[in-house]
Image (cartoon, rainbow, N blue to C red; front, side, top):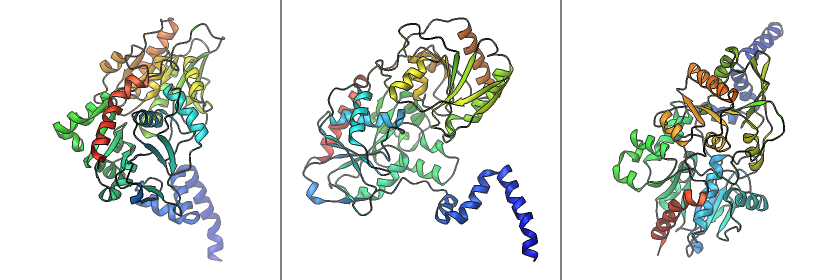
Length: 435
C-alpha cells in the first residue's frame, strides 16, 4: 500500500523533471529503454560507426587510397563532406585508385556521381574513384597491405590507428577542416581528438586561418617547424558557377535574414546568436520594413523560436546544392556565428552571393583577415553585445541600399584551389606505396 501511495508523487516528480531538465529525464528513461546506449553516454567516448575491414594480400599489386567518410547521402553534404569528395575526385584524377569508405550506409552510385559532378563542375566521373561500404560485420571490406588511408575526422583517425601497424606504411593522410578537440568540452573526447594530432600523418589543411591557429598554438606535431613546412594548405573554393549575385531584379519579397542555426553543433553558438538577434530586434534594428527570419542548416531539428516584437525564427526546408545557393541570393543578411578558427563555408558562400554576413572573430580569425576576404563579411567578438551591434550595422547597410561588394578573395573553382595539394598527395602516395 505504501508503494501505491507513492506512485502519484513519483509521477509528479518525473513530470517536473521532464519540464525542468528534459535531458536528465531522457537519460533516466534511457536506462530502461536502452541500457547499452545509456552506458555509452555515461562513458562519454565518441566513436565512429564500426568499420569492418580485412587485409587481403592478394590486393597488394595495386595500392588504393582509402578515404574514410561515415556517410554520403543527399541530406549530409554540407561544406565539409563536399570538400572531402572534391579532394577524392582530384586525387583520383591524378591516376591514383581512390575509394571512399562509408560505414553508416551504402552510397547510391547514381546519386553520388551526379552530386560529385555538380560540386566539382567536371564533365566526366574518374574511373579510378569508387565508394564502398564497410559497415557489415558479416562481409568485411578487403583492403591491400600497401593501401594508405585518409582520415577526415578525429574519430576516423582513431578508427584506423589500430590498423596502421599491419600496413606497409603506418603514415596516413589527415584532412583537417577544423580544430576538432574544440567540438567537445574538456573531456575524454577532447583528449582523444587531441591525441590524433600527435600521430604520424601527412596534414592537408582546409584554410590558411586554421593552419595558422594550429601552428601558433603548437598543437601536436604542429609544434615541429619541419612538420609545418610540409603541410599541404588549401583555401576553400567558392564555386562562382553556383555562388554568385543575382543577375537581375527578382520577384518582390520581404527583407530576409538567414540564421545558420545548428542546434547539434555547439560551435555555431545557437544560443548566443538568438540572444543577439532578440536584442537587435528589441533595439529596433529591424523595425522598418517587412523582415522575415529563417533558420537554415538544422535539418528540421529546430522549432519556431520567438524573437520578440512579433518576429519569429522559423526553420526553412533543407535545399539541394543549387537550391541552397538560390536561397542565399534571395536573402539580405546571413547570421553565422562560428567559435572556431575556420570561417565556415556559409560565410564565404553568402559573401559570394552578394549578401551581408554577420559572424565572429576567433584567435587567428581576426576582423581584419575576414574583411580582407570580402567587405561583405562583418565581424565582432563572440559576445551578445558585439553580435548585436554588428547585426544593427548590417540592417542599416541594407536599409541604405548599399551596393553589392566584390567577390571573396578566394579561388572560384576547385581545380585552382586543391590541385596543388592533391598533386602532391599523389606524389607522396606513389613514393610511399612503391614496391
